[in-house]
Length: 94
Image 1 (cartoon, rainbow, N blue to C red):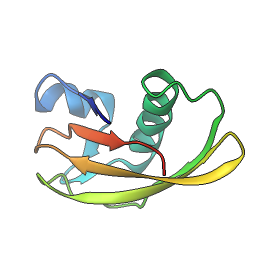
Image 2 (tube, helix red, strand yellow):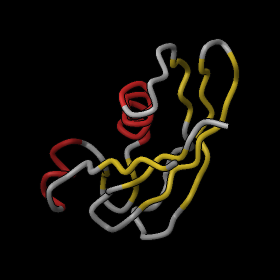
Image 3 (cartoon, rainbow, N blue to C red):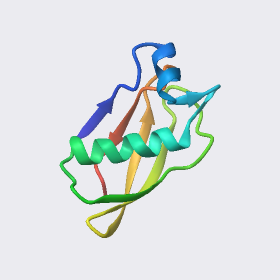
Image 4 (cartoon, rainbow, N blue to C red):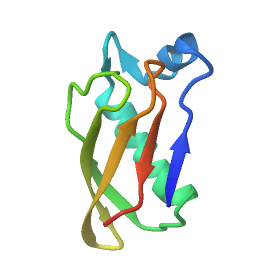
């Protein structure tokens, strides 16, 4: 199961939300988004320590893993950039 998060209604909306800065994703905004998706869409109640790599390009198809602690257990989630408007999807914790 993959949940799609739309961080913006167009490029201006994404910029206002801090989803990207220039041509890279904002690390803190992505980490906050991953935590929110895991909590709200995957029903994970205890999400902590989301760590995503910095300087990820806002380019369709870019994928990267974020480390996260779910219910006290270390997990990883894969994030995939969907388009140049900084929309991305978050995979299920594994």
